[in-house]
Structure formats: structure tokens, C-alpha cells
Amino acid sequence: MAGIASVSLGSSAVGLLDTLQVLIGGGTELQRTLVLELRLPRTLSAYAVGGSLAVAGALMQVLLRNPLADPYVLGLSGGAAVGALLAMLAGLAGVLVSGSAFAGAMFATLLVFGLAHGRGSWTSSRLLLTGVVVAAGWGALITLMLAMAPARQLPGMLYWLMGDLSHAGNPWPALILLFVVCLLVFPLGRTLNVLARGPLQAAALGVSVRPLEWLIYLLASLLTATAVTLAGSIGFVGLVVPHMLRLVLGNDQRLILPACALAGGALLVLADMLARVIIAPEQLPVGVITALLGVPTFLYLLYRSR
Image 1 (tube, helix red, strand yellow):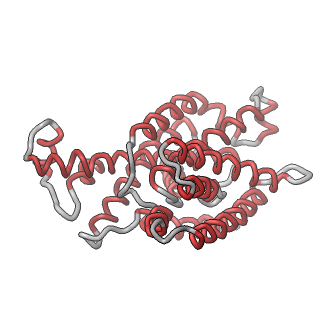
Image 2 (cartoon, rainbow, N blue to C red):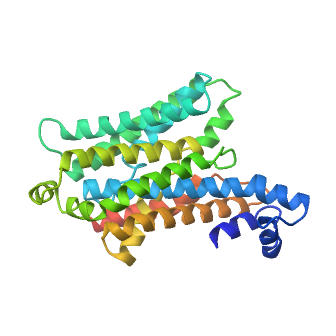
Image 3 (cartoon, rainbow, N blue to C red):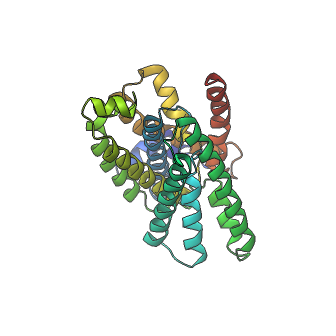
């Protein structure tokens, strides 16, 4: 229903029946262009980005055993954004930008975990604080890059950094990646439940903790990099969605992970629809909508964690 509403509503509304007719091959030429060429790819991109960020957030929260963990808060999104912006400034495009974003996300992951570990074992609170500081550092670096960017590239880079789906490209690689990652992690739901109780308990029960942790690092970084490449830096989806689902479904990862893939996509589809209709015909960056939802949720979780 969220997808149907998204392709129907906008600065030029298309009726529900007309939208259904277009999707089954009917409708006028204008309606087909509006729905199939403009809104449907954007809706699919929003779903892929939202699902990817929600699953990445759920994985990071299992790993850290902390509901405040999120790719945006831990600096993964910032690292991916820096990598993508460097590639853009170098004149690269396409898969090279995606590869640079993935390298930036992986580097951010290794940096955060390396700094938090130090000479002893890391704790979830130390890791969270380290991620917040590193994310601030990425923000400063992004500001420096924007200050040095050519004037002709600056408006597009700024809008992209705020989370922009209006120029999202082909959504199918991100959708395929989300599907493949889901196939990999869904069978691990029971193992992730054990890991959520702590690495020592998981190791005592026969779980290969270190390989599993590295798999989570890799998959979360890959999902975050793909989402950032497609739509820019969109925050708090990976924080809000898993928390809302735990209130309903409990903390069983066999239910949480598939629900995150569905609910995260639906949430961002609805947020993008709001971004298009609130001040139509002008459009807001979708990152503004998710931040308005995410900041109060983050503060509430931080207050509860006292």
C-alpha cells in the first residue's frame, strides 16, 4: 500500500485506479511516463535504501548489544559519504563511486572498532562514544570537501548529502544486494540471538564469534555504502525501525531481521512521499523527514539507557 500511495501522490496526483491501470499496462502516455519512468524507480530506490539501512542497523545493534547503534550514529554513513564525494570530485561515476563509498564505510568501521578497542576489550558504550566522535570528524571532513569543491558541483553535492532520492539511479542493484544479504543473514537468526547474549556465552555454546562478527561488519558496511551511494546520507532509519519492531515482536532476530527489511523500506517510501507532497511542487530532502523522526527517538533511547 505504501508503494501504491507513493507512485500515486505527488505534485501531480494520479488516481488510485489510474495508477493500477498503468501498472497493468494501461493509462495515458502522460500517466505512464509519470508513474513508470519517474515515480516507480524512485519508490523502488526508497524501498532498497530503507530496507538496507534498517537491516544494517539491526545487525549492528546485535553486534554491540546496544539499541543506540546505527550506521549513521557510528560513522559508517559518514565514511561512505566521504568516499563517494572523493570519487565525485575526482570525476568518477557509476560503480567506481559505489566502490569508493564501500571502501569509506569499511575504513570507518575498522577505525571506530580499532579506536574503541585500544589496548583492551571494547565495550558497547565506549564503541558508541567513539562512533559519535568519528562521525563528527567525518562531518568536518565533508565540510572541508564542500568548501573546496567547484561551484558548479556544490548544489548537487549539498542536496545529495541531505538525503536525496530525486536523482537516484537504477534501484535494482541495491534491491538485489538487499535480497542476497537477507538470504545470508535470515538463516543465522538463531545464532545471532545467541551472540546478542554476549561473545563469551556465544563461544561457550559453540558459535564461531570472530568470523560471525566480521561477517556482520562486512554486510553492514556493504548495505550502508550501497544506500549512501544511491540516496546520500539518510540518518536514523537503522535506529528507529529496529526499535519500533522490538516493541511489537520482541528481540528474536529470526523475526526482527526480515521485518526490518520490510518495515525499513516501507518507512522510507512513506517519508519520501511526504517529502514530495508537503511543500509541493517543491521537494524536501528525505533525510529531513527521517531526522525529524530519528532525533526524538534517539534522545528517548538515550534517556532510557541511563
